Length: 383
Image (cartoon, rainbow, N blue to C red):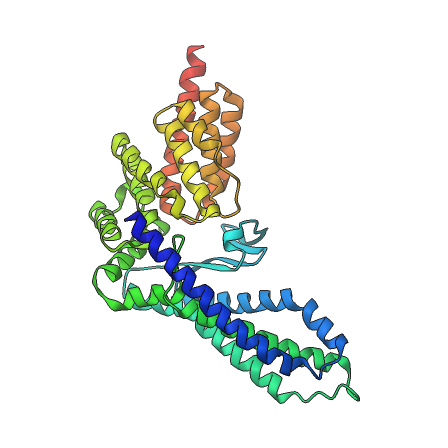
């Protein structure tokens, strides 16, 4: 299964490179025609505005997803554009710096609410980005065509605005085309691939719907131990059968189901599957695997060596639920017999639980923090 997934990944990567080369050739060829009569000062400003244009194009694409999600009554939780990140926490929206290169292009998280017509609703959400990019490309291109600029007798800013719109049109069109093509790489699927899978029916669609149903349940406040285990097991089976890119995350969900239910052996079995598939998960998101593993071995198995082996792989990221990170630190500190630090990390973790997107996991984590406090009390009482 892994070799087939790698084959598909490299095949689509080659297709994307060839496609980009062809587009780049024609853009470059026509670019000389576009810019040949333009004064150097305008060209200089267009080059300076290259990065802002890229961020605007990405921002509009992601805003298309967000708008579609809001209209579909999804819970809009995160908006990322380049180095900028806004996350909705319990106290409202909070700005953070995004240091994760895997999401530097842009990302929106809208969590599904309810289970009605999930396939249709999420496919519309997935297509919201490409549609927004197409709208921006057309609007920017028509603006470029409608502005007449004679560099001899007109202000230079008019020329900058005209060719800035052309740059926006080209970038936005390319983003629309690339995201609408059904691509699957590195644990992520393109917008077109997600919509196609959801609307095509069969096992792939069933897997996507099950995954959305599970995520919707946990984020709405159903703790992992109370999830429908049959749904999780079926999702895992379908992921293996269809080689679904998002299937790499299912063992992590299954691990939490068994961990919350107290089945340590089954939880460890799923955790090992999760770890085995970690290379298919983007770097920044992959840190969640190491946090889960460190916490399980520190809290569940009370095995300091195993906990530290995974904790040492972990790197802090704004994408991670800080409550889980702090809980892992608390569990490790307890094994190191640093009871003061343990208590501090427990308190800090409790403060972060309201900010967790996964409300159900937050409920389960609260119980585990209570258990850690009992362990401290038992140990200190016996001293």
